[in-house]
Length: 191
Image 1: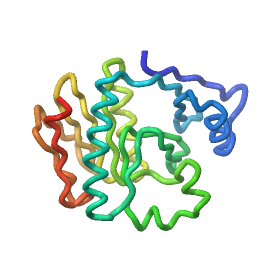
Image 2: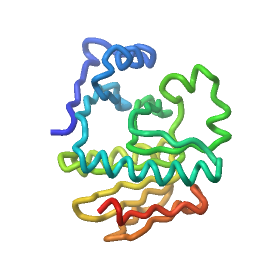
Image 3: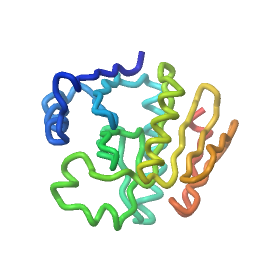
Image 4: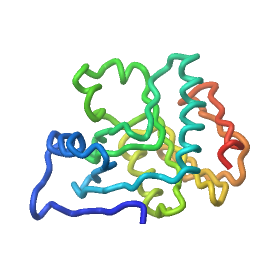
């Protein structure tokens, strides 16, 4: 089992600040919260998933460092989505003007917006259906491009607003399209 979902709503409904404080006081736990207020306790990933995550994050970071179009975040970064859910994508990117519009305090806590671009890497124990639902949640909250990478099947599901999910089988590269102009992920290193 990769995640445990706790419904505490009949006992307590955590405010945004209380949830943030709970995460601060329990740094060894990776916590998310869905739009219904349920807590999701995530377990650490295995070595291959962590290595893939780092490889992808590095490629996006280098592209962004050269282009200076936004900010790149790792899987430890919390985002409070417009729906009220608190999520931590494996890799995420926020366009520069949106990041610059945030206050210093907003930048220090969970970022109060949905990233423009997200990647989730399916771990061996992750539920595909739950991860697909999470990807749809990102799109419904304003994400402009999302990739769900399934290393086991060597597939990438591409999520875009207002479009059906596109599935790429055994891709060698993936384009960042107009969201990450000029970025091409070398996915061969992930398989």
